[in-house]
Amino acid sequence: MKKITALLLIIAGLVSIASCKPKTAKTSEANETSKELPVKIIGEEVTYATDSTNLKGYIAYDSNAEGKRPGILIVHEWWGHNDYVRQRADMLAELGYTAIAVDMYGDGKQADHPDDAGKFAMSVMTNLPEATARFDAALNLLKSHASVDIEKIGAIGYCFGGSVVLTMANSGADLDAVAAFHSGVQLPVMPNDKLKAKVLVCNGAEDPFINPESVISFKTAMDSIGASYEYIAYPGVKHSFTSKEADANGEKFEMPLAYDADADKKSWTSLQKLFAEAF
Image (tube, rainbow, N blue to C red; front, side):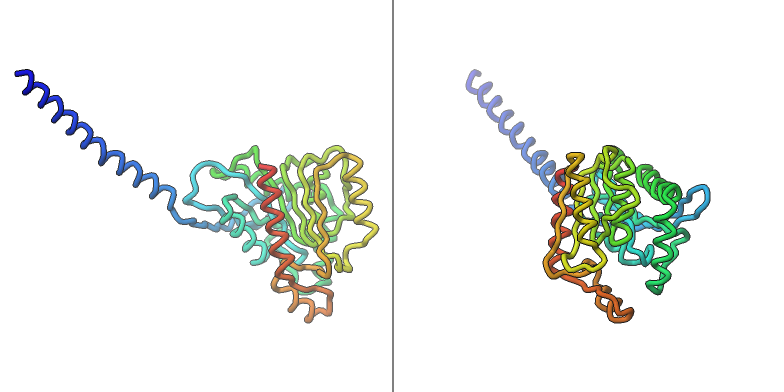
């Protein structure tokens, strides 16, 4: 009788072990399936407004990513809200962020000539209250997105857009990290104790639009407040080095613009490092 009882216990134990194995395998397979979901970027056109201006933006995010993630604002070059700034939003979404390509001119307005671009940009930079309202409207829209962690917000900008994000940060915007590419640093609001963000500036050392004295003034101001920043000047690199349209625009309008693949790649790597440290 004892032998039969012992045999039954052994059989029961083996059945129990066998029954557990498939469950473990299925759980493992489910986890692997979850981890292997491909990146699926959703790009959505959005409309928003200040009290005086209708604005058209673009939000990009990975719909297969779980949980909340940092939100990034992207401000366009002086040409306006175009495909280039949307491409950058998609690239940030691929890195795991939710990004909004901002409209600082209103109604998605774009310039076809440098003269118009200059006028559009000047109208924004000389009206800081309205510029701030447009930036804040995009910031609030970004924070309202279901995928965004509102405690982790950054902003980047190109050319005119770089000056915008630096100015907003210096004005006290609640940003964790700010990056400017081929951007002027002689700003309507220079660095002061309102600045909260870590800052990255990536410029071409041969960019004639960047006054050397303005760089010294910018660095001096940043150092005076103990700001966390990095200023990178790429040797031999001209203005608009991140844009593949730069060469064509430079030739068309006889301007010192040139795409530089190496500087473009290096600056994007530096941006990822900034975000990794900030978030």
